[in-house]
Image (cartoon, rainbow, N blue to C red; front, side, top):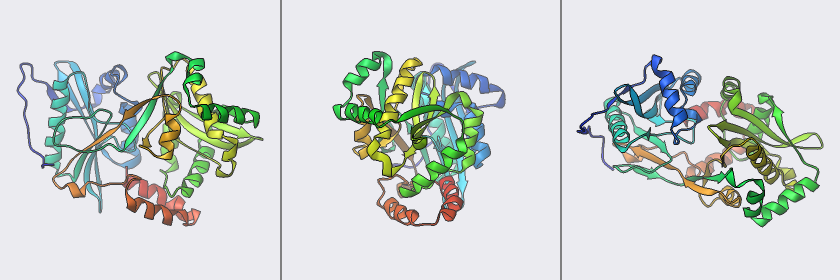
Length: 355
């Protein structure tokens, strides 16, 4: 991998790449809603939320062809003591990177981002792409998701899924489990989620992050819960955006997994998505060939690779906070045995540094 080099493209109709202005947010959001490659985190309102909550500086790039937007690249300038300076698209999100109507626009945005990284002397530039791009990238492709296309309908989806999943769903129904999509109690969700993630050795973000997401974008989020004898035993925070319904975070009660609440909740969410005419069910990010990967694979969806791309003068300085890093397991072992008071205080501070 090479260092940053300024590059210029010669085109008959050169594109103008510049920073997004405050009075252009509506045009940006219109492009986000129309382009198939964008996600919820591309919205300008989320830009403001991330900047306010974490203090990262947004550097949103737009490729203009006259008065028309041809491509966008949402970047955040992150400066932290001990971690240096980084440009990331998009922090605290699975998806990010360049979205454009043409390769010319995508190339122009890529060139501009590389030049910006060079000017700012960042440690590295990171794009969380759904599509691979050519160029001097260092690529990490250990993550993927599964997209279940819902046009086939509930009956056909049921036939296509793995037989063992069908059996576990039927068993869950016989166990008397019920599903609830009406809860607005984000605090109860957060406390249950944080406590369960400690078991996995994973710090969670601060409560205010989930509260602000839920309260600022209520139409885009819902809490899906499984109840057994009036007790919540599994839950997902679910996102709805542009005809797609996506899992974000969730957890369950480990001692009650024999009741099959996760398979049951997954199926009920798919039924909900079909009934409300969503087109895609996004199972959320997984590490390839992990246990979660094989579970999600069984629902009959299409595997979609995620490509996290990096530019850096010094490849060894590119941070690896993935679960594939052996150092992560050592950290997880220590995190599991910490008192909850320490977890509550230290977890958000750690997540702020690993966006």
